[in-house]
Image 1: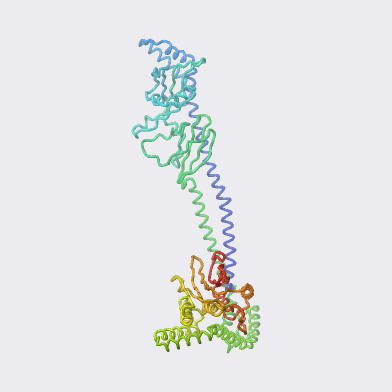
Image 2: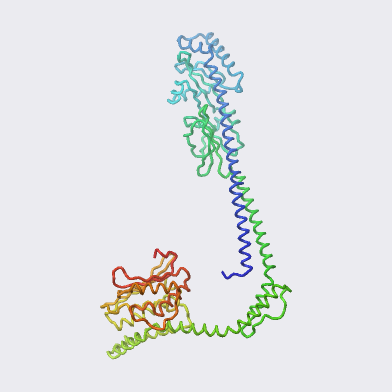
Length: 591
């Protein structure tokens, strides 16, 4: 790339700065930020496990009360009496029995940290026989569940949370622990229900409103939180957790940490919004990004200042060089910044300029001659035979009184000659090139009459494309001059174009005798070797693709379109005719 020295300095130092900034950013992101994210996730996971352990401790302590009661011999004796003695007790016996049960219950809960619990005793027929503290039993709701009945039958603990209702009933919400009463002989005598409010669970699950704690039992029912009839905006949490399992998962907007108890089967979830859990990390990332931007901007500023100071003497030398003209080939006598290296460079330039002055005239003359020769060669592509044929057709039309045909052919020939001899314009619109081709084929049609058929199909969206002047007409003329030698009419020529997202292509197709393999390879070799010297002779053996016009057209198109210029010449698969494809494409093999 022909860039200024200062621009190259900018690019080099900028590349170094960007590489350092990107490398450091990647290191920060892959190691520091990732480590912080892992630690944050680990800490939240440990918090979830800790809450799960505290919930287990809470359940275990309340379950200890049920275990003490169902294993107390005195209470078992009372329950056995309720089963065996179906008579109604007197008021005195009822009071004495209740006092005895109250003493047993009081002893069971005295050493626990839950003095304010409700205890209910039910006989085998599920009739309430004793109430300790308030009467808010959930036993009837529990027994409506077949799953709970099966658990009690299997001597398992049933945990039931009555945590629904209006906000006014918040004080009435409770969690119950129920076990069936059996003796050592597996005789069933009744049920014990120990009931507690949500105060202790509120203390255990309090995480300062940064997230929600959710407790789900093994049946998939939510035990905690205790809330009213408001909609739950968290969405559903999965219920397929394995006992003793813990981990993390996310949904569209939330992140869940979970830990499943292997003691009670209760799964503890902590739900955070994704913005909340990593808010500190995002703040650190934004701060780091701003810091990187500031440091990079300061580095770029230093590069600019340093580059300007470094190249200032060179700029002065360049300014002096730019003042050099053909008439005044000199740099002047003033020193440049008193910089010895720059002065030496100026002296070297002075010597070189002296030598260049002697060769400039020869080079200019040579270039002008070559340019004139190339333009003349391209303009000479319209065969004199073609002009002769057109003039002959005009004379025939005039003799036969076809005035309109004569005028039309004269105008077409005039337009075509004006277009081909205009050497001032090196490029043109495809529309004008196609108009010249249409005039050429129309005039040939007047001469050959029904022997010649032609079609031109050019989409409207490609007509404004810039192409080198006389870069397509020589291919059409070549087909007319050489393709139909020895072929029986009708002769057919088709000029068409295709366009796509990243390519355009123009194809010239005929039904002539095609090209020999040697001629195709000869042309391809000339193009590969960029040998575009004008031939001194026109070759008559076979289609003249080795002549002076076609290779020059290919070179001009390649120089004009760059590396994405596309060219292909081949015989048609039908065995009659050939085609030439040229254009611009980013997908060489797909066209």
